[in-house]
Length: 321
Image (tube, rainbow, N blue to C red; front, side, top):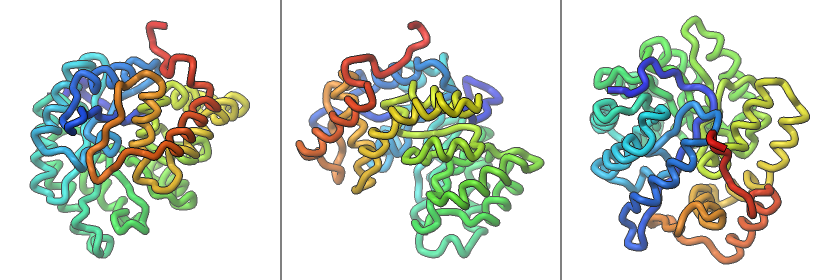
């Protein structure tokens, strides 16, 4: 049962990383430490586990359950936890959703099934059936993960409206449409529906621009490294304090340029290395096919951290400070 009943996904929501040992097994102690570092940042509304940032694609069902269990044990009484639902089949997605609810998660982040990548956009009934099967398995609120349309996994605009109408568990979207025109349309239309649907941006490469369109929150893997800066930026935009927002964005800029440069798939690999440089993780091990970064890229990351003003000072702003 959810530990935070009636949770509404909005505000600043980091997606945390997962630490591994050299043999690729989960390093629970380091993962717990990282989770607590992030979760105790002032101004967060929730934390996401079992997402892209934690390499969920490389984790078994049992490992995902273990990750959620120790995450709830570490911070679950202090902040709502959102659990990712990463599955190609709807029955498997429903199984993950049921597990997450029973464990105590407060919300689900539902990834699009890779099985829909070869034309699923032309069959909206497939998306409806997928989400309905998950909703039949759980009462938890859901965040729909919207991918770019060019990926073959993005839901067309009219399909999204149909999903919102037929699956009331969907309370928000994590918008990675990667299209400024479409993103603004999502923000304006969905948040004005009779049944409000929150837009959480994950356009971390252009976060300030996205937030100024009116998003009511953000859900980002970069929050594993800079949750405090994301909170500051979100609060400044909400307060319409342009000068303050620009100052924070100037610090975020070198990191976003470093994290999201090609190849895009290395973004969370880079974030792990940054946490090592900041003394927040002991080592940056990723599961293959992800690979260790080059010395040249590590130097580039160190330079970005320095330019952002993070090296030589604490990376997180804790509520206790």
